[in-house]
Length: 224
Image (spheres, helix red, strand yellow):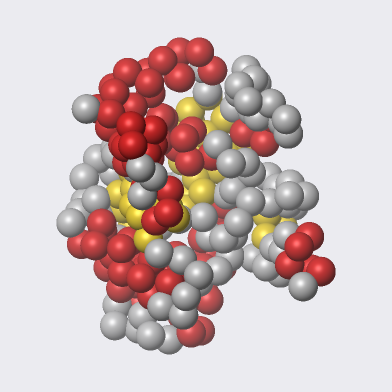
């Protein structure tokens, strides 16, 4: 019930209230395995993508968010499920493999899965070097990749604000990228890097962000 409410009630309500500008929607295939590869500007990016994409999209989410007790815990689990989150364990040596396996199950079932190539939110507004997990998924499953540029989402919920503000948001879906020419080469690190860089270049063209050819690190990572 909660997932249906999120998708068919909350989604249209959010679109009507915040009126995001959506460009290139025709570039999103209506069926078949699909990977959405967005830039990452804000914590609410996942909700924005969920509400504007014509297909149900799956994301990875921390498993601990789904194990709360009581009515509140069940509601949170249902709400996150409605947003498309798939629970995965984190914080152990097998976490990365488990995450890729969970994503692959979605794609093997001809579903749509979204992954942020930068790995984390950009705190400086620039587009950072992409991690190769997105390429590994595309090469292993044959799924097409649609780059997604988000602009304006960083202003939705400033620090200290609980209710998102009405700001201009634009979501631009790029043309699907087909990497079938690399079939059988998914184990090659060089091919994975090449595919990832092609996706990031498409994102750069769509978003107009300044590109930084290094992985993004949060301040706490720099201090570690």
